[in-house]
Length: 137
Image 1 (cartoon, helix red, strand yellow):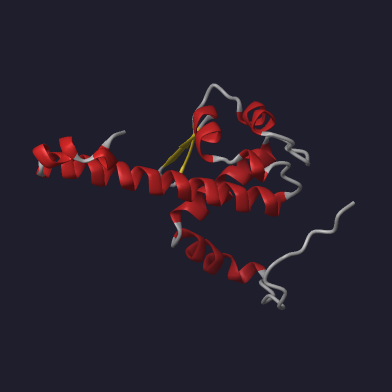
Image 2 (cartoon, rainbow, N blue to C red):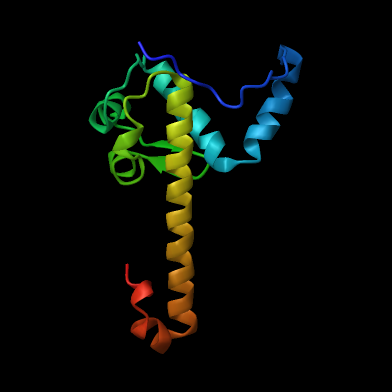
């Protein structure tokens, strides 16, 4: 089995239970990371087992009658297909899952920001927005 390399290769501080509030505050500063942590927590509660081989396997794992919402993100099959690159798979462990989910949610956030900017430009300058090919959805 291939040994994974973790970055950074420096010693990390040792956190104890009294530091929990600090970690929660730190994660809360980055909403996409907070949502990724929430999704991993949900996956654990549903009995995730690794490796998760594909987008389809992740979608099956997340399948529910309830939407999964975390830190402003709605996570469903469509979001997994659209923003979670197939190259992230297989997800070998919690760290792979957290990293891939964080990157994917960041892509989603960026996509929503770009769409909002285009929409604002269309409202502000409708004639110019019509002629600009970069404003096409």
